[in-house]
Length: 472
Image 1 (cartoon, rainbow, N blue to C red):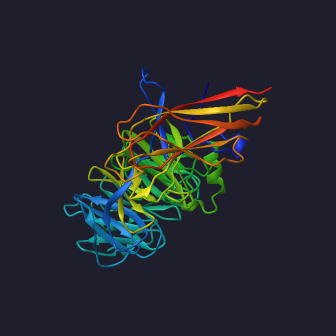
Image 2 (image 1 turned 120 degrees about the vertical axis):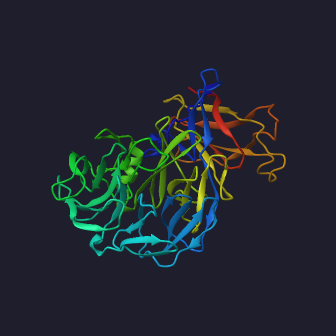
Image 3 (image 1 turned 45 degrees about the vertical axis):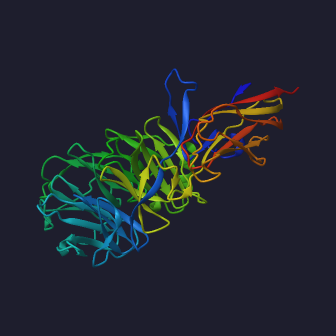
């Protein structure tokens, strides 16, 4: 009997034989010391419908009181706290790039939208129009901080509004002081200071009024930039787990004070380095079932970082190599997001075992193991899983009699055999073993196992044992 080494993080490797295993759409959770195994592997949160529109192309959202405003395509929609059909506002937000949105603390909040290359817009009642003060120019982001709208510009300048006002005093501006790099975003730090994040550096600003009349002053420089305007997160309401970013060193880092500390692994670093247009990389965050997840996405891939165990897993939607969800936002005690497949607003939901009806397949792959340089004969595999999770009244047979698909590679992961389906038990039927016998001989590079589970029932892996003989 050999304990099958389940990975704690996804590590596909540069070659199959160098892989450490993969976790796709699942993550480990530490169990009690008295549990049968040290970890359980659960499915990532699913998605369910929340709000609908007639548009497509989610670009950003903002909560203002009991209303969610979302930019979808060139239109702005408003949603009540209960979701449902969105109300389209008159007017347009031109362009296609992601937007930043902010509101102030005026008695009737001013709601500002900025789209890079398109300028600034304002929501007033049931309409959206151009920003009322032309002195705003053409910013590439906006954020609200300590009573002011703060705008950033590609030439390194930053400008503020008057307090709780859309009025722009042309003297209320400053320039990032460390390097003449592009300025992408302003991000509040939660301590009265904020970051001016550029392509090569980030500057910390706060404290007193600047000499020019700008309401904040330079504090410190962080020698790390970000790869694009959407490549930083952590200031969202309901998060509180720190700032995370994709830096100009092509690594994912978190800020420890003013120090960027890398947290990504080589497999993800390589994906970031090979991404042809790094300005399309986005970093978001959400919380589900007590876990804080940092989402790092590109057009063709998605990885998530679990801040609880500090591990990485891959995220994929049905028949895709990426996650369909976009730019999560906390609203009405829920985490909502856009949808690549539609113009709708979805809810990230830990109790959902699918994505708006589409299967959400969880996959665990092991790294290669065996008796190198000797071959092994594989007599069988036995799984330690949550049994009897079928739903008697569910869809037949997917929910009534759910199965695990098991596949084996006998050459270290270069080729995979056909999968076998093993039932995990109808509702409350927990007797018997989840096992499969006689898998053949593994070569000296070792055996790898792949476990897939697609049924939309609450299911978890805890481990597996392989029965094998070492061959001379």
